[in-house]
Image (tube, rainbow, N blue to C red; front, side, top):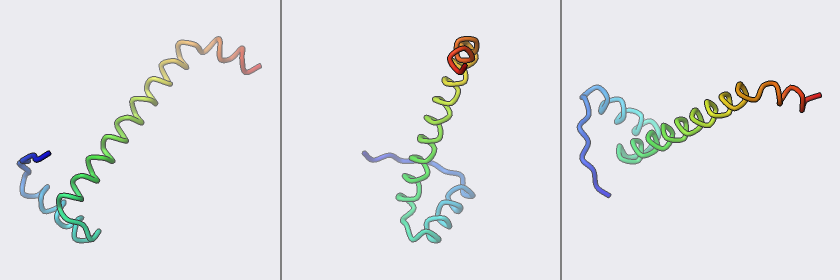
Amino acid sequence: MNMHLRLPDDVHAGIRQAAEEDGNSVNTEVVLALKEFLAARQTERVRRYALEIAEEDAELLARLAQ
């Protein structure tokens, strides 16, 4: 899929610098950054859901721990 993305100059410069440091193309660096963002977002969503369940079922979980 092709996508045109408008970035502020400073963001583009930062991505270009990171790409050069990592030996990647700017495109590869953007793809890697987006994959990391999506993985972190998923992890945070699961963490929030687990915390919600733990709070709702705190009494039951305490009994099971005994």
